[in-house]
Amino acid sequence: MESNSTALIAESGSTTASKFLRSSKYSDLTIVCHGREFKVHKAILCPQSEVISKMCDIDTQELKTGMIEDKDFDDDTMERMIDFAYHKSYEATRRPKHLPGEEAKDSIPNIDSLLLEGASSTGGVTLPKDESTTSIPDEEPAELSTIDQMVIHARVYGLAEYYDMAELRIHACGCFNHAADGGLDPKGFVNVARAVCRKITRDDGSRCSQSDSPLRRSFFTNLTRYAATLARDPDFVAALYEPNLRDIAGDIFCALGERISYLEEEKKEAISELQAENEALQQSLTTTKENKEDEVATAQQRQRTAEEQLRNNEGVVHRLLKSLRNLSSSCANSWCSNEFGSLKFERNGNGDWQVRCGAKKCRCKLN
Image (cartoon, rainbow, N blue to C red; front, side, top):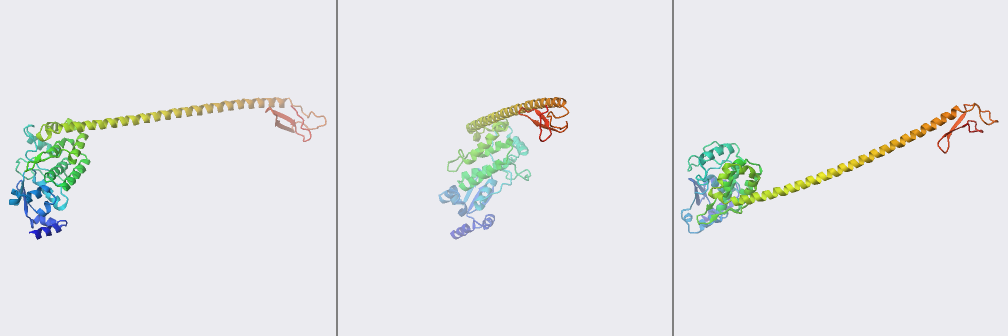
């Protein structure tokens, strides 16, 4: 048998492991879960689970019978755990089944009908008519809802916690976070809460706790995102009275308190940014107004200068015309024979126009 185990270990990392799992070749351990039997190999499971390893090494009933019976988890979740042990992955393609005792029927009236209605309307956990039934009564949807996916991964995480499978815990938590990142309908979030907060006691009496697990922290992060909606959901509020969820009320208040503090800080930062933007806008408007006022003043000054220049020019032209009207018909120099018409115009130091004789040698001032 040892040689068979050695051969199996050598082949477990390849596709041959799938053949062993399907055919149960060399199997030396059977896991029974709600009527389904899984033929597995100690050489595969024991190195990955400290709990299963102890069951197979210590003088226990499991060692004597070569059989582990699990009634705390549904058979689909068990199948996913075994798939991961062999292939390092598992599929989440079937809607999660109802687990007996997962819902507190005495705290919520007609919980069967409520859950059936919730499953059809929100894509939540499906509740078979007979708790011992392992088949899915409804037709499986083409694609699972986010709530279904989160429930599946939370259950796998719980099973990994129960059997102390660290690698599976990490994988399931990553899948849980990935599903949550896609957005969800808070209406079915109560089923996620039940899956995450479910308490399970091992056969040795030790409690399988997730009080400070990465999955639970992720759960509370998502819970605070939809706190306002969940507070108005009667199913979620009623579920807080269930035994498994009752003690998370304090954690919920703490998580909500942290969320409120975070939102308050965000609010303060947003207000501060808006105030800074408003001040910058006011400063810009003030600067723009001052610039416009300066431009207007400059334009007005240019206009006044132009008007003054125009008035000066009009005076010069007026005086020039007056001088032209008073001109004699000939040059004032007796020796100059220049007749009126050959004139020279030039400005004097005051800007006024002077009229001189146009003769080159004369240039007598005529006005």
